[in-house]
Image (cartoon, rainbow, N blue to C red):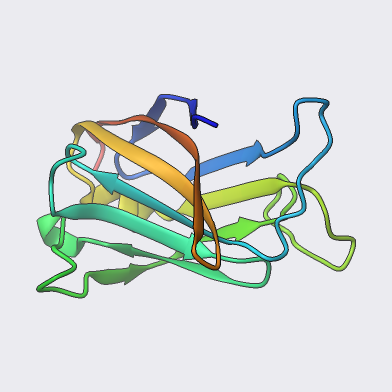
Length: 150
């Protein structure tokens, strides 16, 4: 199954939240309790530099950005920890709990991480991983408008 496409327009220097529900064709939420989620934003699909990386599961998640340079190369650098998360089986408010199967994917980036992402058009995708199985569920353009008030 091909990933859905959704183009993101975000503002540099502002918090950003993306929430969507991964579900069957009949609208039934898919249980993501055995999955880990991950998202990367890059300048292009062919770039080895990552602008921001988010990963997580049903209990916790985190983000890594490029810091003041705006990017990092994972083969030579570790990037800069940001404040934000990627949670799965989450609610639209980013909460997870024992009630379980929501199919929700909640991704948030703090204002500092967003400040460090260079303005312009980039690309992203979101994948769900269970063991050796990887499913690309969402992808598209990640456009960052430049911050005026600093």
